[in-house]
Amino acid sequence: MTRFRKPAPLAITALLALIGSVSVAAEGGWLMLVPLVPLSVAVWAWRAGTDVNTYGLRVRALLGNRVVSWDDVEALLPDEKGGVAAALINGTVLRLTAVRTADLPRLLEASGKAPAEAPAV
Image (cartoon, rainbow, N blue to C red; front, side, top):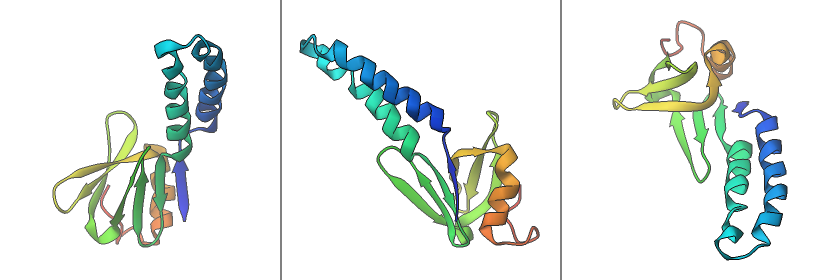
């Protein structure tokens, strides 16, 4: 299995912001909610990503994930932001979190399919 994740410094920065926000939360009132923002970013940065194996793709988000088999993938498409999306046979497009265009060879290798069998790029 190959995993694509957000860069670790993003989660570390969010954790540092969480530590810094504790003094703000100590003031009380609605400021007690301030640490929830960096906490959410830290959990998202740690969890969000795409797992690829010979079965298919698992795209993970902050609160959930979606599993798609290779049989349901029609094509892998680069997007305008340098990322990659999977065009599914049902007509929807699924953005692959943390997968960059430069990662396409690694993604195809992890799929276990020969280039001729792999979804079109």
